[in-house]
Image: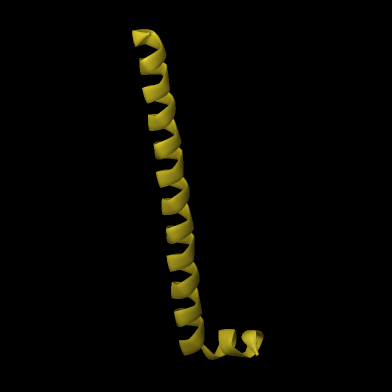
Length: 51
């Protein structure tokens, strides 16, 4: 019983860590994308490529 409970706890911790990592990666990618878009708006070279 006790060992089974500890396995469940480990699985839950792993799942939580994976979810946090995925969320962080998505958020970082979104921030980088927004920053690139912001930089592109100010750069004429980038503006021509977008439109």
